[in-house]
Image: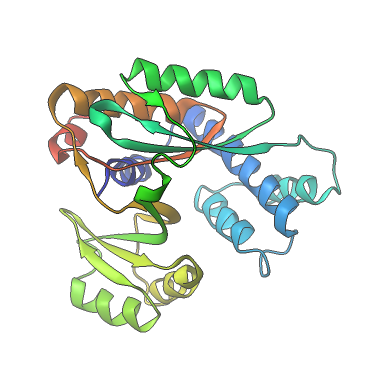
Length: 247
């Protein structure tokens, strides 16, 4: 599993403090607002909004909170106009990094992102420099404690999953984005718990980072995670499990 996926799973397992949850709510509200603005307020006909609402409910966001965000997106309520920006670059050890942002101040955001890259010993690159190294996929990560590979193969592949990969502590169900909802619904119907379920950018190949560079990468992800303007980030870093186990 790439570093960013492992990071997301660890955060999900540990849960969030009140401060972190508030920051996560802010990011989810932004995503819901933009998704509704771009594709309308009906999640049945708006896959991006549907996915954002799944994430919001998973974090126990109050219904009136996400409904207000939808109304701001559709123009029923006054709201901030966020701009979507994707930055690409290289992190510690030359790993490829994609950073998805939603911002109302582009100058502030690029300054923060450049600072984060520079502090980690990396740099922001040109558009397209690393995006080709990633594929947009659905990812559902199931702990080995909650299911076995044979059961998941039967359920997920029948529902349209593309592949199932075994990781150290989990099985990762991989789907095409348009098959994600059907596969997730099948896993839900089977009563199988999962640690992570999202549309993500999966690296085609991994770059191993160890020692100081692995520690730099963890700090880099922490900085990006703490930024209000950064919605999601992806990398092809292959970080040893023991580095995460020490967190």
